[in-house]
Amino acid sequence: MNVIVFYLLSAVILLCAILSVTTRKILRAATYLLFVLISTAGLYFLLNLFFLGAVQLMLYAGGIVVLIVFSILLTHNIDHKFESLELKKKIFTGLATAIGALVCLLAINQTTFTKTQSPAISTDVHQFGLELLSYGNYGYVLPFEVISILLLAAMVAAIMIAKK
Amino acid sequence: MIEGIPMQHFLIVSTLMFFIGVYGFLVRRNLITILMSIELILNAVCINFVVFNKYLFPHMLQGYMFMIFIVAIAAAEAAVAIAIIINLYRRYNSINVENVNTMKN
Image (cartoon, rainbow over all chains, first blue to last red; front, side):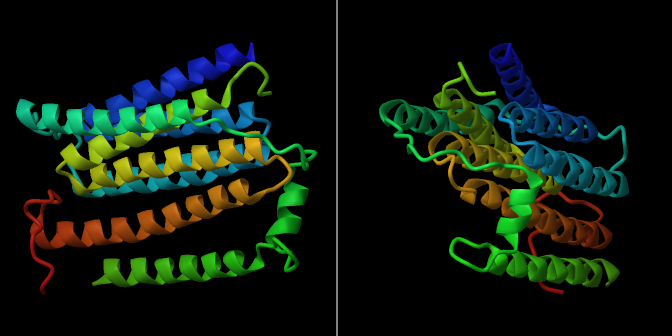
């Protein structure tokens, strides 16, 4: 059952990702991107990582896509259509990325991954909260503080730039 | 649950998604669609972090933490990028990359 769900989600991800970078209407591209992000959240739920799935749904699918759709509506006419790309460019770019993907896939195929034998840690929100604010060994309080400063700086910068 | 799904299949999906994002980054001419390709790339990297953590190091939380930080950085990046895009649109009335070739005031 979960194998079928996995392959279904992967098919949706790949199909919508391809459509998102090739479609000629920009609002449709944003919608396909939304489908990709929601299916990725589905993958996280499949891996039993409910907190990460929720983060993915809220921040990516709920936040960033809405931001992108807002900016599309502010800068484009809805009926606007991109002109089609020239075939030569499509072919050469596709070839270059296909070669890159092939090299990566070969590397994945050649590598043997060894699993550690330690017992698994629980991955609920409680554990995440404790680790995120712990300052002992392998605690994450420093990156947490740095990222909060970064978010503040980004907010101030966005207001400053858009106000001009 | 993860029984019956080899780790390599997750990695194949994320690799293909990454390179689809790179393709979009290279062929698109519009700043917002380039931003969407970057989101695809970041999303593929997130999947990689989470899957490596889940399959190979289940006694740690590092990959999950990196995923959360990547999402936060992507949100900050999208906010700043969209502010810049709206500013460019006001100034040049277009957000195609070939029309925006000066950073001077």
